[in-house]
Image: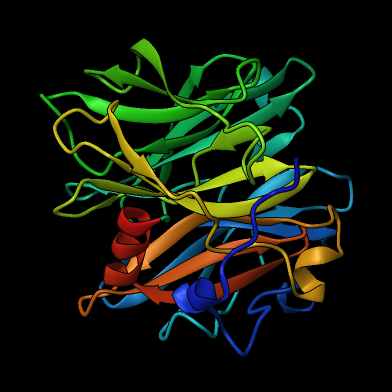
Amino acid sequence: MPSKVLPKELESIVERHEKNPIISKKDVPFACAYIFNAGAIKLNGKYALLVRVEDTKRKSHFTLASSDNGIDFTIPKSYVFSPSHKEPCERYGVEDPRITKIGNKLYFPYTAHSSQGPAVGLAVTTNFKKIDRLGIILSPADKDAVLLPEKVDDEYVLYHRPSSSKSMWICYSKDLTYWGRNKCVMKPVAGSWDSEKVGAGAVPIKTEEGWLHIYHGISGNVYRLGLAMFDLKHPSKLIRRSENYILAPEKDYERVGGVNNVVFTCGAIVENNKDVKIYYGAADTCICLATTTLDKLVDFVKRY
């Protein structure tokens, strides 16, 4: 059954930036093969993207792109986070960071890759100048992890996707080390745009309606973005999800690249005026920007 088409009256829910791709291989001041998905955060009025960069040996690292306006980014001539020689689970690289601010600390779960498959690692920093590894918190095969930006009932909350289930799960921890009470919270929908797999996207956004997730769904090897809402006090409870997607591969830079037909987000920034910047990887080749408003996103998931 074919994926559902986004109705024409909803096409303006997000707008691609006219400068897309905003970061591509030519913007990286060192040798690299591809650049991928980026975690996003705004600190002291400045924008930071923790960007996955694949070197010419096919191993992934993170570099830090910075910007005053959220559009024009500069990249230093070095990595800020590389696979650890002491961690067997990172032997093939580190991928897909998602940055969550809790208190004055920045936590980023990431995917660690090795011959054992993907696992979830966790690191913490305050300014990216010194980054501490907290270790592998979810063993292979697991990925697509994102940390809720506040505790619930004095527990940290993590969404993730065990590779065997193809669904989004949740787990809890008192200390960021030991995680438990795993539960499946959202499954693929047969015959829809997210019929094969669903997983976390950007860090969930707290709204009056609930925790708003910009998540990714896969169908026919095409990656798209949609919306879901979870209960504020019970983040394992799915309140609603969008029947339609909000962003799909349409432009050449989204359709052709290292992996064709991919839009995939690891970070979104909500401005004080409720404008939203969604940073997404396109075709596993470049970083792009889509803009919208928080009101439009909430209205979309409620109406559709």
